[in-house]
Image 1 (cartoon, helix red, strand yellow):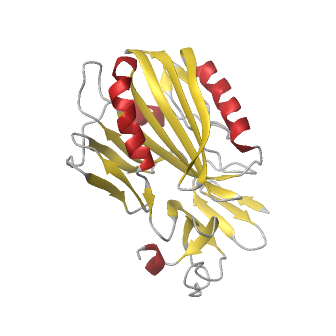
Image 2 (cartoon, rainbow, N blue to C red):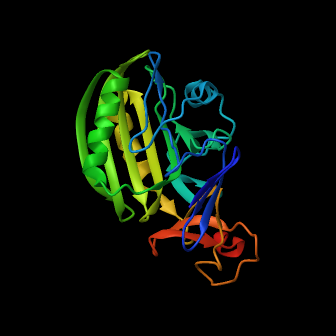
Amino acid sequence: MMQFSNKTCVIQDCSYAALVGSEYCKAHRFSVARLRHLAGKVLKPFWLRAIARTNFLKKLYAGRSPVIAPLAGNARYTNTEWNFSLPLPKDWEVIFENNIQDFPWTQPVRLAGPQGAHGRASVTVVTQVVEDDGMGLAAYMVKAENDLRGAFKNLRLAKKSEQRLLGWPSAWMIYTYRGDSGPRKELNVTTFFGKGRMMWFQFLCETAEEQAHQDFPVFEVIINGLQIGSAGIRHPQVSLVGAPSCGLCGHPFPSGSRPNAMVNLKLGRLIGVCDSCRHA
């Protein structure tokens, strides 16, 4: 059973309801957009239906000034809202984090490298809770390629492969296209954590094609260096309503509470987690 209002989406089944604070929820699954503004076109998401919103597009790809001081050396970036961390290479910096006001297009973080002759390389993380459609990675990448060809000028798919990230299915796609600033090359890595209701975790790694030989190894270091806390990966705008107790410590939840929704990688599913376990 699913209930909707202008501000919430409740997904009810025999065990719990997932409550999502958004006016954009759609029936049957969370609507998630991986939106790109390039040459006046919008790229629709893969597997999921898109909702276009001008303000979001401006925020996602407009230039920004860094709001967080850069970290150097072998530092790590840690996001306590989503409960993950990434390597932060020397001379890279955090451009923004926890962009959740344009739900469901939630962006935990964007990292950017130093200024090069053709601009800056960047890594943007986009994430959402989604429903497994049962089609698998091969079908996902076919659909993704079709969507990309409809959105980018002169797109050329260089490589696609099925891999695993932290033990979970991961679609890796490398492609080139012509952007407003010239030839671009992108590594797109989408991992699906959990089963059934999954965490869709995507790295969008962009650079000028002429800089790809030096930037792609850095992209791979960042992606393969992903670490997720023991409680699991959390979506800060999703709560599990009706979960009887914490899925980790068993502590009962008070009636009417909205426990943290986290995909625990050991259990392989979305569970309700108490604050104590979340911060452990």
